[in-house]
Length: 385
Image (cartoon, rainbow, N blue to C red):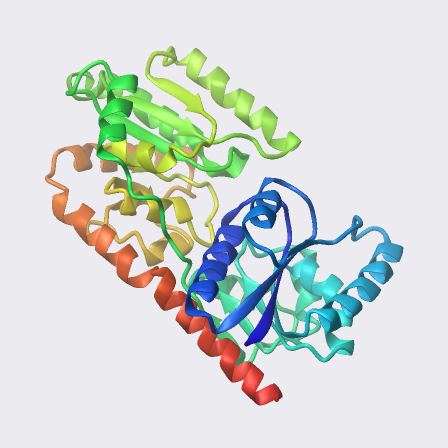
């Protein structure tokens, strides 16, 4: 059995960490590869995996891009670690991790794949593209691929590129919890529950959903006055706290405190998604992929979301939900969202919801995607033997 080194950038669980965790579970189930997890930093995700999984390690010092001495220390640490763990292949995400780990990988002659999860852009992607030593570049969407091709300083050979769909999975929603949550947030069964979810940061566009609901309540009070919106998430960085504050102030200014509430992330998210009537995704810039959109679809919730970025791979207007341009002028985005929400409530969406769930289950299936990735690993390892 070959040992695969997963270099994990942070100690909390974001999109790329979710993908890695799902791959690890499938590796253990398939028993073809032994995953070895190496974290750059401590955090709740690292601690959970270290409790659940024996081969979880933490780099015992802080590595900083601004500190060249830490690069040297990392080189010697990785050199020893790769040899001791008998690593056959490494899997890296994020350009800075590739840049920092590259010397040790080259010296130990360890082949590696680079998973471009996004977002793409900035000097680090350009610098990382100058060292095309990876055997494959994996992308989580065709949008991410096109973004990296634009950023790459050197041309990319098509035979080194593969698109690997994200793995989308949630705990099966509990019907009893669904009913309980609806009764918790709604006063009666005729009310409508809307949900946004994701990290609170300025480009997530939650103000669009707030304005849209305010406009609908004014224009269609008979249909929307009883609707409530829950925004699930929190600011992960200090720089995002001002934006979070402005959202709270906007809700107060529009006198919507009885209709819009904010909740932190919790393990109840699948049940909250299942309890809602509509999930709204309104990012102000194209995202590489919106995992929570797929999670909402798996939960059986109608999605009204952006038609920009990697989400286009999953959200097909009129078929798996409804989409609008969330990245244009804000007034236009609000108007389009208002129109899409009004259209959505006037139709029977049972077929759209069923088609969306089926698409996620068939295309973003953990078993299929893990088998695809393991096939790539096998080809690389065999060539390197």
